Image (spheres, rainbow, N blue to C red):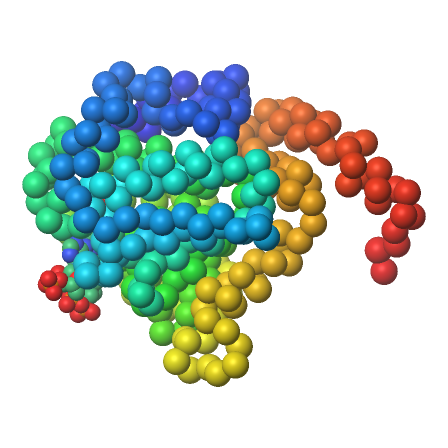
Amino acid sequence: MVLCALRSSSCCGVWSRLLQRQARGCVHSSVHSFNQDGIREKLQVFPGGSVDLLKQDSGVAVLTINNPSRMNAFSGSMMVDLEERVTQLENWADGKGLIVQGAAGTFCSGSDLNAVRAISNPQDGMKMCMFMQDALTRLLRLPLVSVALVEGKALGGGAELLTACDFRLMTSGSLIQFVHKHMGLVPGWGGAARLVRIVGSQNALKLLGGAVKVDSKLGCDIGLTDGVLEDDQEVTGVGTSLQRAESWLSRYVEGPAPVIRAAKRVVLSGRELPLTEALRMEKDVFGTVWGAPANLQALASKSKHR
Ligand SMILES: CC[C@H](C(=O)O)C(=O)SCCNC(=O)CCNC(=O)[C@H](O)C(C)(C)COP(=O)(O)OP(=O)(O)OC[C@H]1O[C@@H](n2cnc3c(N)ncnc32)[C@H](O)[C@@H]1OP(=O)(O)O
């Protein structure tokens, strides 16, 4: 229903405005009956765990899904936490990168089934779905290069969460599974739409239709996974998984924040907008870096790219 409303308004101007609102604001704000505050109140009734944000001086933030006693399942209050952390990241002008991880060596086992059982009626399900679509769409649209660090298991909504990052790293023993079929469901947090864009419709249908268990090898083969890290217990002297993920990300966030953020913006518009609009957006973003300090400095230093 929500997606239909978005699709039917797919003229370039609307898409452009949607993307331009990426800095702040709600993806579904124009959809009748999407009352974000009302949904937030409803979700808060299901407490437990937290979503924690650490903004570092390096310009790389770490977002941790933290509910270890339930394998980092999302309680209602954690969904609200997630949306608030995304707002904080939208307002973080100096940021360049983001790592999304789960606490205590596992990624995320999806929605908290206790909360899911309590809101298993269609109306509440729709509201939760729109709230999480909004939060995860805005997460992917942040002007930060983002990577999901998948340790342990990423199931159901947890698998959807990792598709809302630019890149995915898996530790060698980790597993991704869109278990929705086994729950009589399909993804509702935008995970199917993003998965198709990452692995193509053939592979996406296999993963959803077969609830296939994706290990690090299969993940690499189909392009879901961008790198494999050895499990912490298997290695010595090369740091924790988080340190290795930071090291992997460092080459993509090295350099001045305005340039890295501009790179993410042009890729994002290329990915989401029709060509004419994407070109217009690229021109606008180009205008923010042309003649700016990093550009002038590079020109003055007569740099060679050997
Ligand atoms: C389908 C989409 C939907 C959505 O909202 O869009 C969802 O995401 S629904 C949730 C889909 N996820 C699941 O169904 C996961 C179910 N859990 C498992 O398969 C296992 O617990 C597993 C594989 C995550 C871990 O297995 P393991 O043997 O290693 O540990 P335990 O089973 O003993 O789990 C420890 C502890 O965590 C609780 N737990 C795990 N996942 C959830 C969850 N999603 N919601 C609530 N609680 C969860 C589990 O019940 C155990 O608690 P305990 O009190 O010890 O029984």
